Length: 377
Image 1: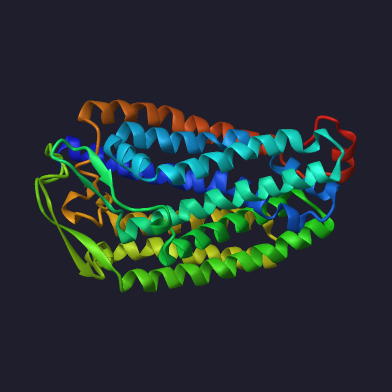
Image 2: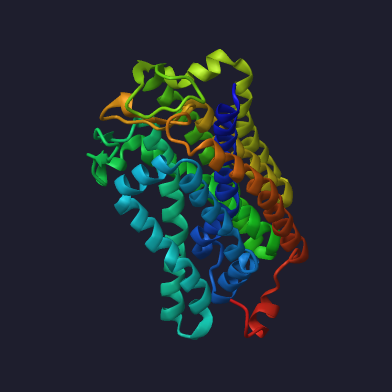
């Protein structure tokens, strides 16, 4: 593989890393928001849950920014096509995420139970909706997205918002939500005590079981689904556009990469192993281990989807031959090379300061301390 093709493949891998970071770190915070009203039955308990992630939730948003920025810079055709076609979905995601910082900052400013209850529901919605959308997006990639290109590479989206909420996409959204709830539950276990700890522990076990079932069901569903195969066109690293390739559809084609490279089966195995071991760790009250196993499960799930789809990034159900791939949707060689340099500096830096923040802020959050601190959430 020549240099340009290697850079395109590297950025496909790095995009996967950023998506896993987004799923783990942002999904953890949103998981706490989703379960807030369950693990916290009183105002003080809910404040404890919010203050467990209080030092981290805004810093974790960097993964969301990195993911969007990476798509914009490394795969601009994907960014333009997806954001125009999924405009309503993106607005829904944006509005729900805008409620999160408002909920954190304003919830405890007034003592009114109605005021605080309203913001609790806002935090639930802003935690649940984005994770369902995240999973549903992957589900729609497997089914193909209804778009095509004009002669001048202007994309035209021919689908509808309700069409994106198909049964398979909903299943993938529920899988994403289950893993988010598991991570949020493990996080509450790490920072809470007593009855909150027990509620989070029970919820983590339920979420892990749900994730296993949904992941397995999704695999069987994909196996019977028509998949896309790259049937012809310029090779990797050669300048190309979506207008100069041929794509075929065939049952079970999404498993072609696994059949060609059996070692790749280790990726979905990691997903199942993380979920099942996380279930056992939560049952054994090993909350920190459960958190890391949840992260491994996310790596396995996102990696499984990425391996199955490769080299497709945005398959077209309208005109399959115009599907966007790693090879025809990337930036120039110079752009990708510069981006690799920046990624080698900033991704380790982000991992370092995130780890440092969690180390400094480790320990249990005490209800009495939250009640006495006027600056606490």
